[in-house]
Amino acid sequence: MMEKTEKYRLLTEQIRSLIEGETDTVAIMANVCAAIHETMGFFWTGFYRVVGGELVLGPFQGPVACMHIGFGRGVCGTAWKQRQTIVVPDVEEFPGHIACSSLSRSEIVVPLFSKDGEVTAVLDIDSKELATFDDTDCQYLETICSMI
Ligand code: SME
Image (cartoon, rainbow, N blue to C red; front, side, top):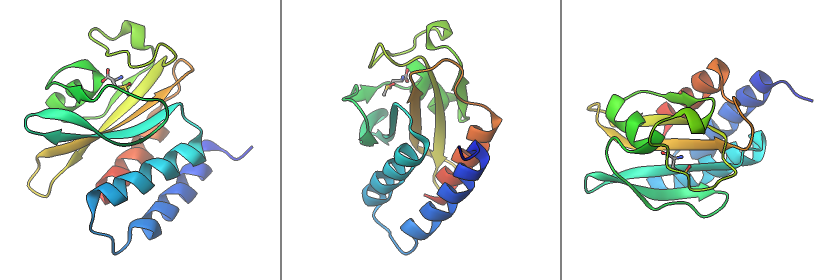
């Protein structure tokens, strides 16, 4: 089996060429989450966008999910508030975690920033296993998010 780092390296290059020249954010988010989801085999991969002072569900792959998340709420709202990536090895240990699916056991949320430093969206990835995400996931997913 290909190592995680190698998968991410190829994925990052695939995404770089996939979105080159594209300016529509929804189209980019749709293909980026599909590429991540297919390559890495996660349970749920998607974006929430900052719209009207809350997070609203954007393009995603996986089961249906909650559509609105408030500032500071759940892992997604906390990543938005803290303006940083959050890795949760066990969602049951995260106070206020929003359970869209009882199958989700661990997750990572990476914020996306505008040119002037505002959080514009978050990338949320859920896994059915505990402690799926580590520094490698952080590093590559942050790189991918900075390309969007
Ligand atoms: N787990 C998220 C909610 C979104 S669903 O997992 C897709 C959270 O607590 O922010």
